[in-house]
Image 1 (cartoon, rainbow, N blue to C red):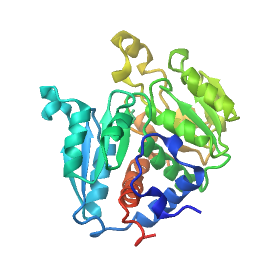
Image 2 (cartoon, helix red, strand yellow):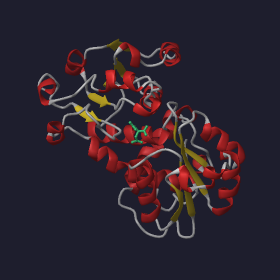
Image 3 (tube, helix red, strand yellow):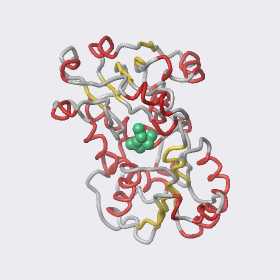
Length: 311
Ligand code: NCD
């Protein structure tokens, strides 16, 4: 049986480190933490080291810490830290860990969170490392799916957009292998899910199919997970422009959807969801962003050993 103790002091580097029962434990904890505010984290300090832009991840973490009575230090841009003077990530981590109890790290290079964890004696949470993984986004996505659909198991989940570089997609697809979901991957050939991830789905016996036509995929979706084309990962700006508008979800396309479809997006949205969709009753992407606070409250309290009073 999973208990709060199983989370104490853990790093959160990839979703693969979490078993299904642990994920469900976290989602249940998030339910309980949703309305909790107070002084649970009084005197605890969380550091955000963000070397890439962020709105939701950083601010929902900061909100979560603040609502539980802890405090945050950190930077949201490498240019204002000593990295600008040539300090390495390893040295930055070695120093900052002496100022806090938990490190939240976002970096453009894959594997940086793992590297940071090697140098830190306190827990490190990967808040996005290049095109690799974004585990806490996946926790929020799972929470949103369960809350909006009432379950996760057996759902038909359609991913559309940049499946090549989208780290939120990479983490969520991986985790869905534990929930018997049926996965449809909609992308132009250039932006397909990377081969090694397709192989992993094959090895785990996950049913998936690949398509290029969003309109054809929508009618069967229980959940439609739209994604932004990741401009910052393209080396050739012309290539980016070729794909930026590959898909735009609008009300016309949604006319063919199941009435109970749930539309998700990790955000930020550029052109892939028309604003006319925002008032659709099942457009859940802003709720998804808000659920981030409950999930991150639960996660931090668990990692720092303060969740037992609430659970
Ligand atoms: C995502 C990310 O940073 O990977 N954003 C987020 O954390 N909500 C998705 C994206 O930037 O497209």
